[in-house]
Length: 198
Image (cartoon, rainbow, N blue to C red; front, side, top):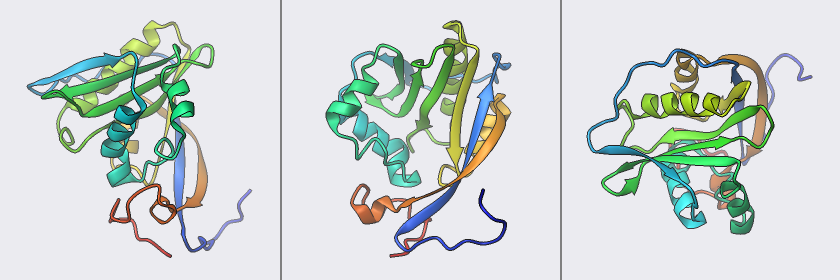
């Protein structure tokens, strides 16, 4: 248990509040249509280079997503090609511009392991459409719970988006981690709104 009060974050690190959310039955979908020229695609045999490029564009450059970027390709490939991990993207002009990774490896549950849209689709209805698909698709597999987590390093509207979508917050954690811009896992110019304390 962390004591109440302020706690210094070590130099070279960042701190974030992680919120876990759950949905135990399909929420009412929020009506939305895909933007013009955008198509939803299932990716059945994702290449790790393709995946890391998409992961970087969706979350690494702006929100300090780095866990999959530092992962060895063999380990990453085993996860994203697992038959119980289902990958979707939104395609715009032949380029993947969103990530939806649904992890069914725990019986009766599905984790939205990664979800987001690249800057080319930010501010459009694309995110809402992709989440509608996630809810419909996941519960169609006979699960009892759909869950995910977000953190204060993510898009500032992410938590509110998930709550509006029908997810219920169930707990929080504090995470302190090495700043990925100082470890070389992300470029120094990533997420410029988050200060670096070297």
